[in-house]
Image (cartoon, rainbow, N blue to C red; front, side, top):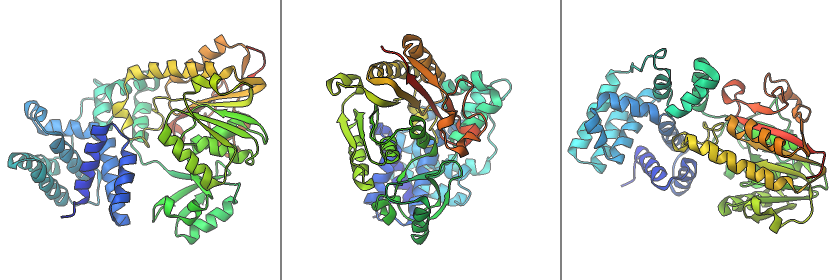
Length: 455
């Protein structure tokens, strides 16, 4: 007997927790295996991502309806079944309440006993009656209120309250819980943006040219999987968010140069750099993730790029591979990813405050290692997809303090005209600082430095 979409969603959520893997990857593998309609794919995706995004809120709601002792005894399958049911009741307006309740009860029968299914039935029926959940008082307990209502860990909320205050912290959490826009980058080695837009229209895809970045297109509605499009197979575009596209512009690579991409997989920035260089020169792309480097190799082949040399190793071992200094280096550093939580939905539940300092140490080590291989008058660009100062400004401050041979340069002149017009996107010190709740883009940070002396 075929499993229902809700059962499939439960399997994905269980696997995500058990394997500590990204839900995105497990979801994609599942969709490839199953013969699902586009409607079913959309429904499955909504349940999986939505349940993870709102996990903290759903957990709070369950605790309002179940005594603590009973809650602690819940099996993971039953707890996740409750989350799935509650997500439909509170956040999916098009799903009838009775369907959310009945389907969840049926799943509970398969995974538990009659007592478990009875509990699921009772909790969800009560949820249908009680749509107005009471949260801790915002003025008295702001951390607890925002954490429970807007579904973020308390440590994260506390950090942001200290920096941004209540209103901005709430807006930041709302942005993290929103569905991100979908952008693609035109491969101008093969096609113009106008040609790509016409091709997408012929394939029944609703798309609009971006006002911000000349090679960017926003996909408004996708009626089929992206990799099934003929324009994708022909290598006419690469999926990439606009914040990420800005980094190659800040690097400003030139034809014929030698460039290092220090943490490159799966290659969105490496391939963008190659395109800007007209596929002339050399890019040395380092990464420790063999699987993700495989994706970079596939993308290079599809996009018609042959100047990227892939090196499967930690860039801190750079001396084993390079003897000469290079024109430009990009350090897209490993980070906490707190700027892209709307895309990496499980990340906020896996990250810890301690990891931020661990990333900061690693980021500095990578910068320190690669800086020695930048030519005189060469460029070093640092970027992260986080909004935390310890991983951004503080890393750069420490680096500049210990590396007087590098001089900060304002990123503004290197940004596309449409981005330059956005208020507050470049700091007083000339750093790129994108906040997801202020700029409706992925949270990103970037700095451009020029080597003016010798180390």
